[in-house]
Length: 170
Image (cartoon, rainbow, N blue to C red; front, side, top):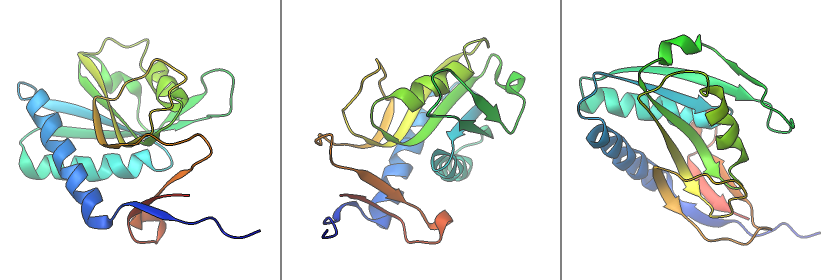
C-alpha cells in the first residue's frame, strides 16, 4: 500500500508565530490578572502549554503555573491524573491547552477535571481546530482552523519528540 501524501499545514516558524499571537491574546484577555494556570493535556498539549508559559513570562509580569493533565481518552468516563494538586487552580483563570481539536472529547474530559473547583475563567487553546466537533466545545484561542474530511489525519510534530516542529495532514 503506498504511503499517503503529507500535506504541510504549519512550518516551525508558523507554529512559533501562532503561539506568539495566542500568548498576546491570552495576555489581552487577562490583563487584570496577576496569575494564570496553564493546563496542558498530555502528550502534546503539555509541550504547547510549556511554550506558551515561556512566551507569557517573557512578555508580562504574570505569575504562570503549569500543570500537566494525563487523560484516559479511550475511557467511557473521566479518568485523569495531574502532576500538581488541583486546589492551586481555585479562584484563578485556567487555560486548558491541547494540540488538535477534533471531536472535542479530549477537551470535554479536560473540562471535567475542573468541574468541582471554583474558577474565575476556563479558556481553551488548540494549535489546530479541525471543525469536526461531536461535543459542544469551542476554542477560545486557535492557531489555525481547518475544514477537513474525517478520513484526513492532522499530525503535530514537536521538537520535544526529537523532530523539527511541523503540522501536516495525511
